[in-house]
Image 1 (cartoon, rainbow, N blue to C red):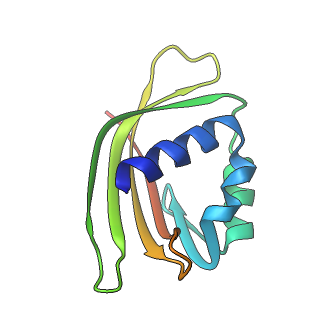
Image 2 (cartoon, rainbow, N blue to C red; image 1 turned 30 degrees about the horizontal axis):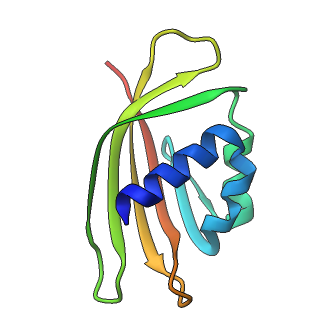
Length: 118
């Protein structure tokens, strides 16, 4: 499940960030570079407003494990980003907590993203 989600998330992010809204709910929280945003609308507004036109995520590592008795999944990703015409990738880490939505699917309850400098 972790690999399927990650592939879908980053493909969607790279092609059209506004389409990520369906993965979040009103109670979802994004912390992007230490700035927190709550709710699907606010999260997508934040992601769409990021200052780049093109982006490509390259996943380096992916780990997933159960996160709750209710069927939640914790996903941790490390990788590299290629932004616009930049030739040097930026390293990042991202953590997702996925919770069941009651219809056999999952939504992003928590999403934490951080660039790794140095």
